[in-house]
Image (cartoon, rainbow, N blue to C red; front, side):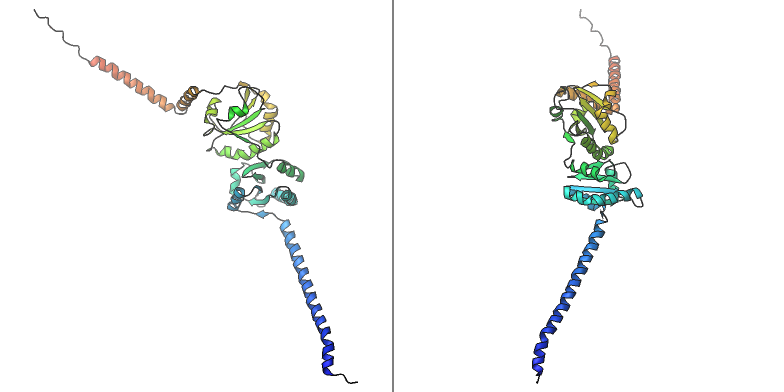
Length: 326
């Protein structure tokens, strides 16, 4: 039997194609496996760390994102590392519950805007407003605190809304109010904002927590309650007011005062809202109190005027008597 060369070539061609195809398939499979392994390694490495942001990046996140969880840490700190590891473990739950950014800031200068304490500090920003976490380093506690306080709890009061919302002088039905008087040029007030939000979170559904700007929209209310320095805290309950003047501004002390400790402070009757004339009088009195030199200068001017008046009286020559005509 004679086998032609063309016939042999024809019969062996499918085998060669199959072998070539198998080789390509094996290469593709190995490439896919390699890509899968690389993806797993990358994902594992990412999940084992928190994204580090610089101050300008953090400011942009706070400004533009709805929810941002920030862990302020410092280098070479075992306590900070414990917080980092805990937050890594909790990150997936926070993302699922809040769709929040979870980042860390190392040796950040921005921390001094929100707290006087040292790292580690954990803050939760809601539309730019910070909430300070001060609880245990525990997954459930952190998750509960953040998910239950997605909306800021501190209310902003003004001269126009204070009496209507608090009904402080009447002791009516809007509940108890714990109010912080602040001013825009007070650094300590700025650092209190995150703590004050936490106070509001812990007193939620028990006490209304608010703040009012003594320098601008709450100037008249501040004069009404004789508030001159900031920050200053007043607790209003049943037509009475209790001044918090211990000097301690930590969260637990403030919460304790609003719950029970206010009973140890002298109660003051809440003054009624001021009339326009009373308000003007109080403005003048406060101005003289803040600027005693004006009163001294006025006294000197009055004294000089009196001396000049008296001296001019003595200098006047008596008129010569007129002779009578004969």
